[in-house]
Length: 390
Ligand SMILES: [Zn+2]
Image 1 (cartoon, rainbow, N blue to C red):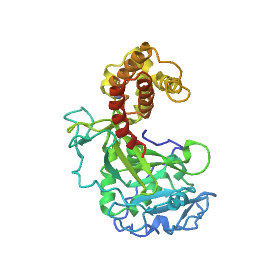
Image 2 (image 1 turned 90 degrees about the vertical axis):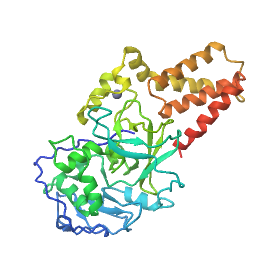
Image 3 (image 1 turned 60 degrees about the vertical axis):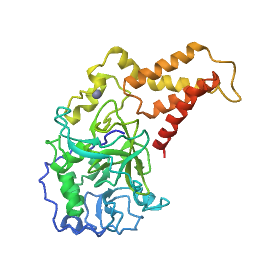
Image 4 (image 1 turned 180 degrees about the vertical axis):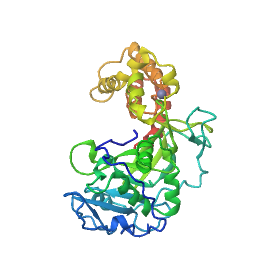
């Protein structure tokens, strides 16, 4: 899961920050913020602010729609959502919407937010496991505080800039959510305070996008807890957005020990060191994870090529079992795959989906060569990881 924002059209006019109204009524899908009451005002020949009824889905494509998901106060929290296209229609039509967040089945809370600075220099707050967590297990599910188009430039209009549009959505939040939002880190002080928070903390929601080509149709979400998960090029969590519950599900991508910090990667893990540094530059920190401090030409090559190599093994593995199975695979191939697997683990790439594909190729190899014991152990590991897809 990458962090998500696009710079889009730069704000021409420096934002004069309007404080969110403390009296904003977030129970209603109709904003009471004065700025949002310009229903029908001609904003820039195209875009209009639109009062949104909770269940209305046939908005004009030229509308900036402020809506609250789900519309009524909910124990799992509510998200303020600025929807520009047809994504609202899809979410409201998803079977099961609005689904409650999963209960943790009586299990103790598995995480805590605390200062990571003392442990990992320069990280500020971080999220830590409070108990051992199995690979694939749910750590928490969270409904975002705010969801906006990933291309925030789409929120700018001729008589209002991005910051003002964000202020309307933030003003609609309940007080607790608004406080949590305003307390999030901002490493983009050159932007308006709200856009800075969005750019620092936004997670791209690939599962949520308007129809049409291009990544700028996607949305980005700002969460209270998930936003505190720090970056590592050796991520140990997996995030998936569930449309029916309008929430991120954060699971352990591999076994996590009590006290370990949770990490996800703000950039692609397939990049060599210099490209990762460039991709992380907007976040104003230099990653000091083990993979970065021990990077070498070999690890750079591994990262650049591991997805292609895994795909090649996956294709080869079709011939190792089943109807297409040919003769027994050479011992050298078994050693080669096991060695490759160890390299992926040591580089911290065992939290990726690609690694899961690698495991299925190895399983076929074990079955081909009659290694039943090894196959059983692998099946158990794969069974746990299967929850990452659910
Ligand atoms: Zn790193």
